[in-house]
Image (cartoon, rainbow, N blue to C red; front, top):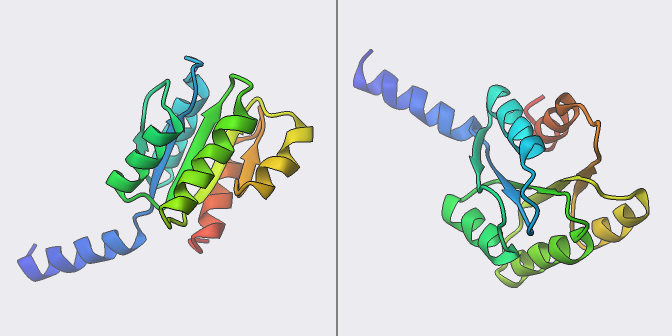
Length: 144
């Protein structure tokens, strides 16, 4: 393959490659769901960066900035979603950064409206097929 063709292919890939940060906020150490979502997104063609467990909101936002991601997915099972998720969206807002932010984990239905008002774009509760998350992101990024 010639250099010109390789450059064109790389340019096309850069245009369509969507970078997604999957983060585990808070003190819970259960990350199986986060890893399953990360793998499903990767297999669907997204570039995925996984933070690992026990990230503070500041660490999540700093990683999103450093990695220049297009979206942030936060897995949370600790029950601290009403504190940690708004803190992440507030930090993004203070830094003037607009990213799609979605969350998953054990989040009661009664808290979803509150979290969406605080800037969480979508919430996926337990049992949501990964295909639904992929479809949501592809639709958001107009890849469908």
